[in-house]
Image (cartoon, one colour):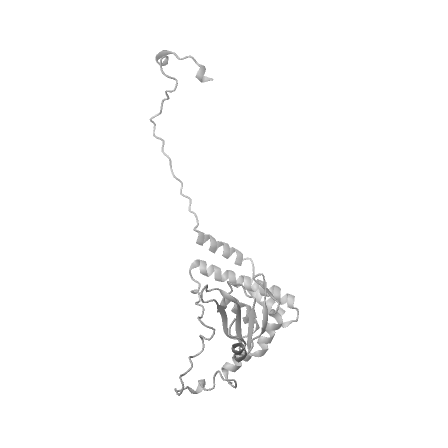
Length: 233
């Protein structure tokens, strides 16, 4: 509507497109808002999640469930405990305090000493090791070993230690990795100190749902049978 007004005075002959700009300086003050980094936010979220449950209560409930025969109670308490431990490791990793990622072994037998050449000296504690009639720690470890299959690709040794250590002392855990992709091949071996602990783990965890997969837990075949049955899978 103002465009229709008739011009007058000094502006009577001026073009209507001309605009007048003010020369006043307007000062702007920037407000700085401190924003949390992604790492700090992740740590905060993990701390909040961990604060919602009592670790001692979870461990106590788990031990009570293990003492009974109700498999569903064991499964529920195991899930609570494993979730908390994974969250704790994730929080340490977010802070940069977690352990360095483990390097997968190159071969299934990399933990064993190399075989001596023919006629060479053999230490007393290694004599007879690996033979069909071998005895001692190696044979006992094989007898107390369980094989876990149907594992997810991101399952680590620490995940399995958290899962199986509630049943008894563990001597060693071996997760089979692909040498090219460095991902889990889907199976692992867990060596218990005592055979009865290994049996309890089989009874409770065979058919247990873990990482959206159903675990298969069974006695591991002796090394001689595994090597004679077509080699490694």
